[in-house]
Image (cartoon, rainbow over the protein chains, first blue to last red):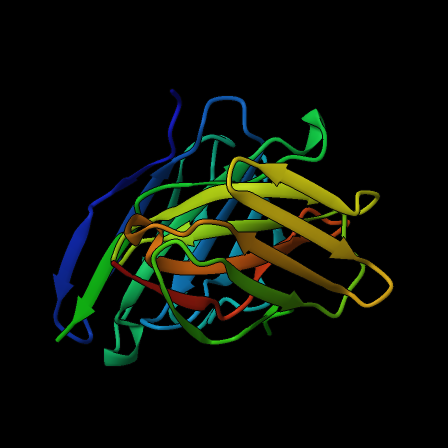
Length: 115
Length: 110
């Protein structure tokens, strides 16, 4: 069964360092989402791509966060510099909106700890 | 900002009982989805209900949707210890934006 792949699963980094997460969506899924989930809270949408274009990044802290999906397939989310408050689970999801009214499929996430 | 709001925030029941969780939202939607998340893991899709549907069943799950009240409920019947998890509703808007609520933490006591 096709899955959304994310790496790494866990990342520990020192504050002020740069960190990057990678996501490979399910093949053929044009829409890709990055979420941040703080412990005990629901996922918060950071950025949404349709193919290689950003559809929504209104909640992305653009002074330190960046996201790209250059070829409209896999995607990278970067934080530079990392801050203590960035410690969270970063989740990637994909969906096929053009196929109808469908759900989003999630990867296992990357748990980031900033020390 | 999050559109979905689950109620209650936490729920503790005995195995075999039914569990009901509610979700309210603010915007117009294409569909509403329910997800489960075990501690420290990714989100697992449970069930999707479209905006033109009122009720949907899947195994022990029953979901209702009232678009006039902008609310949904998830009922888990005959709960099991393995149902212990956090449950989230997520609304999908006309721009394919998927927005989550804060979740309900369910504990099923054996």
